[in-house]
Length: 168
Length: 208
Image 1 (cartoon, helix red, strand yellow):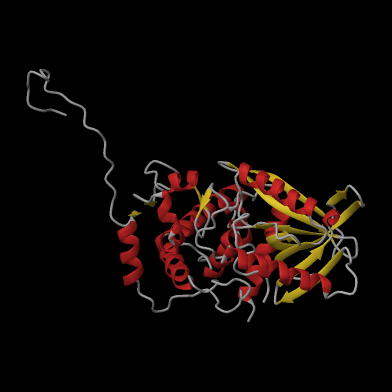
Image 2 (cartoon, rainbow over the protein chains, first blue to last red):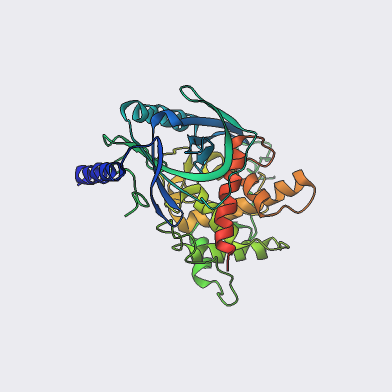
């Protein structure tokens, strides 16, 4: 059952990739309301676990994606994570990025928000340094064309992505 | 206190363990939570806006719990201006995406992502929420939205109080949410991102 869901997702993802004439490094493949699916080259993705100190120490997880205009949009996970969960998540996603050429990202957010040039800058090792564009999305899931996948709320448990994604 | 003199206690004096007795209406256990929710007067209750956060599968599933418990604590703490139930709904959207028990984050539990230290504070009769606490709530109970929602809202009211004391004025909805997330005085990128996300969700709920 889980394997069939996984295979269905891989098929679905490959169709999304192949439906474009070329495979640009950043492309919005599907949109439904504020739900958005992206196909992004791995070198355009950075990740971060930022420490938040309150009466306990927690971490905010973010993915910074370099878009088609070479500005950076940030996808963050709304719930704050424990240190282990946050850094393990980065390791698992790094594996996804290393093994894949086409990276699927599912996120929730608003493209109507106009781009602004933020002070925040992000350095992509192969591409250079770029400014944030002020757009903020909620990170939901990331996967590659081999079916390796990580869901914001369910980690690498299959089926992945869960619930709201992929967009049907 | 005095007790009868015995071989074991020749002085007739003993120390009584202090069991703090709490007045009814200053604490909630699972039974009280269920009973209050079932019997709550729903006349003039303000509900969060339905059919707006369509991106989330279960977005409107807990509107009734949000409405009842926001109203309950608004009245309990006599808050002015009262907390808007849409603030709670937008918070839950950002914390768990309305998943009742997202399993990937063992430090926080349930739909409101209450952490273990927060659960402890919420039940501590001498702690920072001592004026109104919960009793006998176990970690696994937080997987039930019927328990997690009133506890999350109680914590949000506490965070409103701490935000007010930090800002020295009445905090707005965004500031209360930032304080819930421990980000009010933070200067991180994550704070900016979390704030923008909350604004998006809240604006969607408020849009006519």
